[in-house]
Image 1 (cartoon, rainbow, N blue to C red):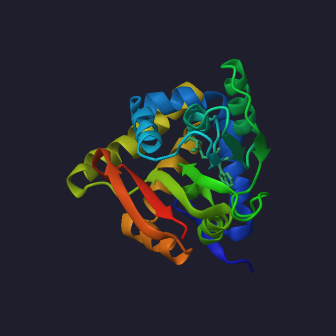
Image 2: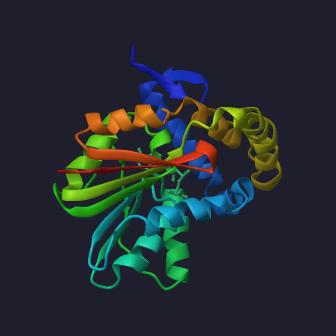
Image 3: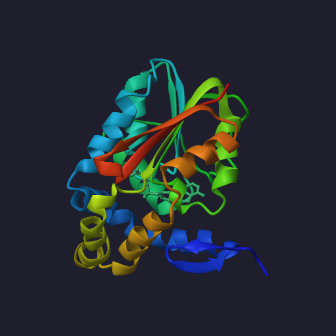
Length: 244
Ligand SMILES: C[S@@+](CC[C@H](N)C(=O)[O-])C[C@H]1O[C@@H](n2cnc3c(N)ncnc32)[C@H](O)[C@@H]1O
């Protein structure tokens, strides 16, 4: 029998998880952006803006956005690195990637796009100055393998940015639980006609490693100077690490 893992609150064989995650993102891709704004009250833009502006990424840098979906971070990176830089938008899911690629093209941005599994990245060793993954790590089956791949493709001195839901400040948790488990699936049903995917979202957040655990996982993958910054009371944390 396969090893077991989590898909939200359910326990599934490891071999099943990627397929189930794929179903979620094929289903939500067309409504993904509007749901993001609605569910977060626009806050996801602030979290991503903070990631970009505190990154230290500069003109000419090479940046890989993993699980990049509809391209919010890739677009931001492209503006920062300019014409002399290189930004790859990658994701394992063709529906998300197609929405992202089309959206960037509509804005006049032509970036290299690649259908890529974070656990087996199709890039050479020591290539990128920065790697980002926003709200993607949570969905990966073997997070340790994905973190090692991120480490491999970074140049020495390169930085990893992991933006992800995290463990909320305790006094906020009753409100956050009510919002996540009562309001989110209803919004998902009304706007995207898909309550289950938004139930999975709420459950997967609760099953994701907390701030300190993710920090340790990054250290285990080889990163140095690992630290994190909580945002919105720990609803989200930005972890950074450096490859030495
Ligand atoms: C919540 S979306 C985040 C999209 C985008 N980064 C953002 O912040 O709006 C999560 C993305 O992770 C992708 N994903 C899940 N597992 C993956 C894997 N193993 N490798 C690459 N991408 C993956 C999904 O296809 C989906 O597009």
